Amino acid sequence: MRYFNDTLVNATAATDQTTEVVDTRQVAAITFQCSMSAGATSTGDVYLDGSNDPAGTNLTPSNWSELTTATIADGDIGLLIADPSPFMWMRVRYVVDTVGTGTITIRPKSIGF
Image (cartoon, rainbow, N blue to C red):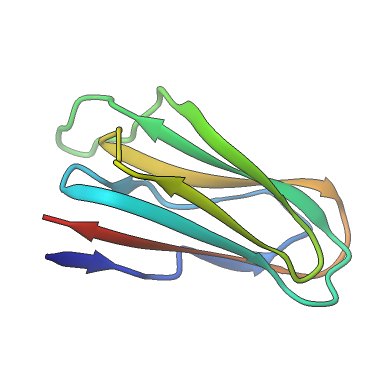
């Protein structure tokens, strides 16, 4: 079994953020924990996107489908779940609703083959 639990984003919540593309071809299930720092005045929405663009050298998927979304604010944690993982590639986008202060952190947890 392979596990993946790296921090993909730990940045200001005052601007939009997008994670790197996560290769989920050998992932059975994956969740993305999206947390906003306590005391934050920024609010926003996090979106889980998936792509089945063909694999290849230097691939950057360009055709994305939105799977699920959550709204996060001061001290909130949003959990985006793909079980089973239906796409070859996934990413999470944070889109600011209210510009303010704070930090957005996005961390996946997956189990694979």
